[in-house]
Length: 113
Image 1 (cartoon, rainbow, N blue to C red):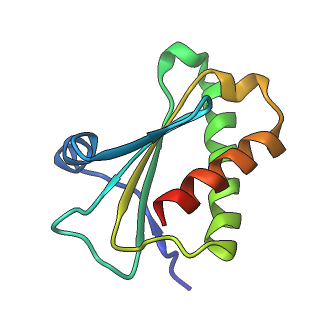
Image 2: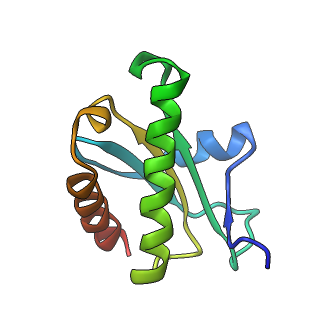
């Protein structure tokens, strides 16, 4: 079975998303919007962690947390598959409890959807 989640890959896709709508909280900033050349049956989402946050181990931990939350979110919430998402993590994700982060992200994605 092929995955229904696909990462953004082109520089233009990132630039276009950064010009569109955004929601921000104390853990992440989520940019979202429609991209022209996108398959509507797949969820386009990318996770970004800046080098300022820490070394590769810390950045990968944040990405794993975000992917885990997203997998649960796809099952429980109806996300808009015609949108593309860019999730930029903030340093506060390292220090806080997983349950709090998950709850906050669920609320933000419900606002979008």
